[in-house]
Length: 115
Length: 113
Image 1 (cartoon, chains in turn brown, blue):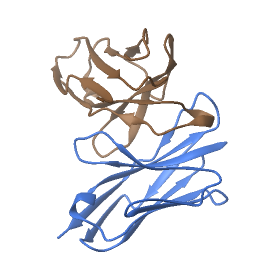
Image 2: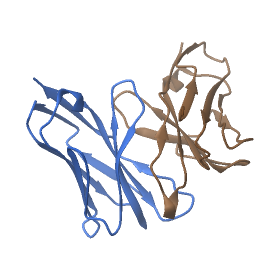
Image 3: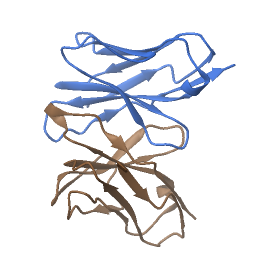
Image 4: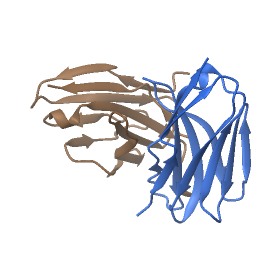
């Protein structure tokens, strides 16, 4: 049981380039989310999805797009990379949120550097 | 605005000693509170999840307490080990189905031999 798988683990981009961070889960979880974690800081929510076909913005959505065409996959797209997007990105999934919230399972992270 | 504040920001203890980490929150309406452990370079891993009606929950050497009246939680680590060195994150969820959980900035614990 793989849990939450993120690819790639490391990536270096030039300013202005675009790329997609991949996230897949095999637990049939409805809720998936993307976070960024800057050095010495807590996790900040970028985008989240409560099910296939449904996405919404989190705390810091600018510069990122998401889609959720299947339950399993939740890719994060950087439209035009900027040095301010240098960070570690985590994908997470959980069976439910809100009133019936359960624990979230996190991927191992993608360390992105924009030069 | 929902907020979660953790203290101390960092802590250094000797192996074998106990310690307590604090979490204060203003999330409303409260649904549940979770503690995660994040090792350096890894994703967070769940330690405990507590709902409104639960006061204490244990997971091995980790014991979490919750006071919903004062909106405070603590994570007590007993007989610390070197492997306990990590960041400990407090996360609070509200009752709405949108479930935008609020994360604390974490407490960095260093256990020294």
